[in-house]
Amino acid sequence: MFMDREAELKKIHRLIKKCTKCRLSKARSNAVPGEGPIGARYMFIGQGPGKKEDLTGQPFVGKAGKFLDELLKKNRIDRKKVFITSTVKCLAPENRLPKKDEITACLPYTLRQIKLVEPKFIILLGRVAMKAFTPFKDLDKYHGKTIKVAKKAYFLTYHPASGMRFPAVKKKMKKDFKKIKEL
Ligand code: URA
Image (cartoon, rainbow, N blue to C red):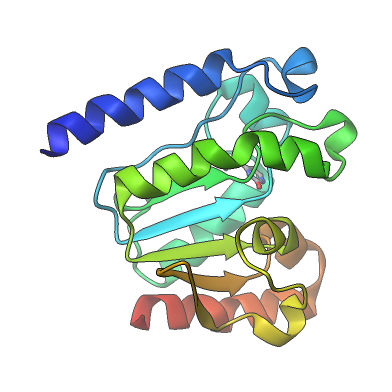
């Protein structure tokens, strides 16, 4: 059964690689579908690929990725055992926030990934992911909490790029990641 899901996931990732549904496809070097095993306990969803991700086609391999790796390692969460992706799969010019129509165009891919991977918990990294997948808007209020939306369990925390820049956010992220391990 996993085999079928594996094949289906590969197919979705091929479609993402060729996707031209929104303007972000025009300037990208590589779309970044994400990576990780079917049946992963945790799926992490960020905002969108940065420069390094765009060049390599892999998620969270730049500076923010290194910080994410650090947080995972500290909490003995094996990166190879989690699924990692982003809300939009293509780099936005000058790393601007993805626009509403770009998020809407990409959303079905991530929902398909969630359906195939069947994670127990979906960890939303930052406000873009929070707003795309939940009706919530106030991350300061809801970070560190698990909420159920359409029968899926979402855990909210900040984006690693924000944690790297702001010591107060870093502190909150460290606490949130401890909770993830205990979910
Ligand atoms: N930020 C994201 O949201 N995703 C990546 O893959 C890299 C940085």
